[in-house]
Image (cartoon, rainbow, N blue to C red; front, side, top):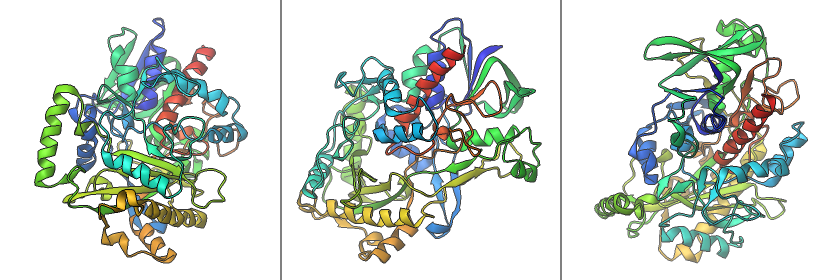
Length: 529
């Protein structure tokens, strides 16, 4: 018997298990469907390219056909390994805009405004630049500047300034707007996932049990109270019980699925699937949204210091492997998306509504498509999409993946802003700092010049930038799933703690905010106990 069961060893689950077991009287069981995070491709930052190429350490999830994207199925990579998506992501450390959290609070979630959540960001953080008004030092989550940034990342930032955008060397400081290099979740030249920060150092604690390869299939109840979890491991169905609470941290795609498999969700949908309705909660799986993203890829065959598949590229990679093994520096310490920024689609916007990621290689189809030669890629994503989708069950089989429908670009305003963003990005890439090298945009997008042509390109190539949220929304309304203490409405002993609770997506990468949510949840749990 445990005090708490944490379902999912990803970013939030790692924080919960590590923090809660700081109290030696509290016993925690962590269930993770994937393996331990032992792969060198996880720990070597550039290994993310290999994991993306071969879809390693992930669930292999795709969307349903997206009407606004020419009925294409999109890619939805989510980590299936200790550390979750923080073990496979591009390691960019971004919190979002301060107003994002004030909006959460204004939607009926007291305690979630910027002034409320800022201390949890600082508590989590160990920023190698040092502590100041905006950053913490001494926390488990290491944040650092890139050890060996590519010169073209600096040139991208210079091009952004030439295009009229301010330079910003701290996107998590007083203001987000501008262009520059990202800080990353690295430590000593390695990826520093949530698992490495919060979980791995404490695996020897006697009050912590981590069970990998354990796929949760159902939350167990006595009346209206969650008392345990049923899971499948190695073909065997087993159960584990909790004295205090069950903490669901399976992420924005799988947390709503497990609730529905347990009979918690939209009654009509559950009945249609053949699952007895234990608790009719219509908002489970609703409000799914994500940052839609489109990429411009430029070919630069003579720029051998960029990543690329060529003889020179292979020699550089081998040299980089040797350097990384010796001293954890060099080419393989890259996160690929080294630079970027936050800009406005039009000058009249009150705050940035677009995010840029500059990748030091030719990125096609999330890196899954083999592309020869050297070049670079520019991403632009929409920070506050209006379109909303859903997560629903494909069947009552707990081993079947759910149906994921982000409903990308269904709202006309989303497409309008994406078209403007495509043009703003192209303006930056055309500035002298980069244009001097003669790189050429690939034909797939180069011919798109009018708004209608750009819209057609977006419909053909846009996809996720890996930030699904909102499917177990926090709030007091009839379509909300958890309250401001992250407790599931109408039930006892059950909380959801992950990106699925976000009422509205943050303006940037979602990993740091997910860690923050879990840090705050720990205090909520301690107060309740």
